[in-house]
Image (cartoon, rainbow, N blue to C red; front, top):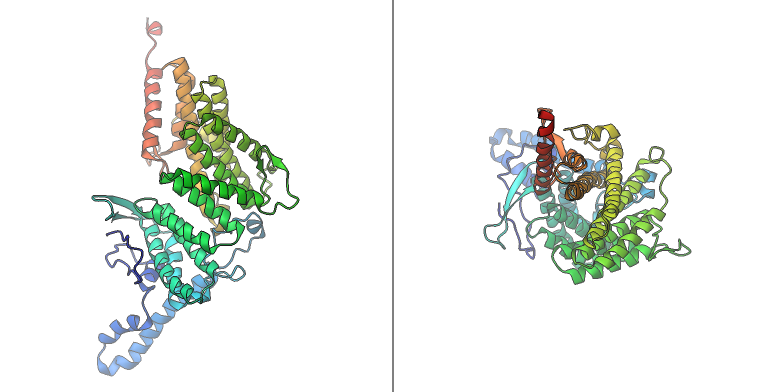
Length: 500
């Protein structure tokens, strides 16, 4: 399959007829999204003899059309219904995450998009939420010779439909027949999926989507989100000047929202008054921290990290996660994970400045503890599950209260993945520091490496050996496993003095 890169064409792209995936509702809607009733009926009519054609064709056609329209109506009014949990709305997990252009009170899609675009959006929704086992497709990037990428077919189909919906929406927008806010939501949807694909031209396409969405958005809540994503994408592409501009813009907007009579500044930052603004600001600070450290601006990085950690500590945390509502708990865990990342950055910066090792060790231990806590709470795993030798945490599955919530599922899944990765990275870095100062026979270094592979790995089907978890990079796993095996071999060697 060749990856399309010409985004200026005004024709719709048709689904790939060679898709080998089994027939499902999502696949059915994908194949029918751009057909009309005549296309459904014509093949049937062609196969009938004249005497029976009239009644039989009408019955079959009616059934086909009823199923087709019934599926779309179900998605529009049931699957795409607006978030009804007041706690989810209070903690703003529904903002951006569950919007598909429809009215906030009714959900669904914007009627102004028209019949065809709305049906294509239903196909996009169905592909994106498909729970069938994921498959992969190989795509080629014509812009780069001999460049191929393997991507999730679910995301590829979703992106395909969203782009076609955008093409149709642009025509409505040009005639002033569509609310700009609906078009903005479409762009944000496409940008998010393009970011998830994350290879080839898709990061650039996501950036273009966010830039266009910025032009059509006047709501500070959306603008702070868009600015954050633009900053991260610009940094990824090496456009650091632009990245700094957008991070600054997002930080300003996040701290300005609802600040009339709000909380006083903490350090160099002011506590945002809305949950979403708090999450966005904390994420921007993590991104900027990583940039400063990587740029060698160690003093600036240290100042930012210490102030950011002070800010996060000043945000009220529930007295007990167990007694907090799931949306509130997820918010608190999100901020706790940001503090974990900042702690790792600070440990690296202090080590690069040749500060005493104990300071870096303290921040790494704090990062590991925080990320482990996040992962255990999200999976309801006991602390003992992460301690046993040669086994990772028994339960890697997200709690049903999050998997069952469309507004929280993606955010909670990403948070669990990041927490596991961060815990593994923190333990591996502590192992390196122990090994540097105590040598290959360091028992503490070995235990740290062991904890790293426990968090980054998953138990094989045999129930004995570990392998890299699905969401862990192979390059990271090879480092963790090599460090663990190297010291394990040393630890298992017989002591010459004991053998005499």
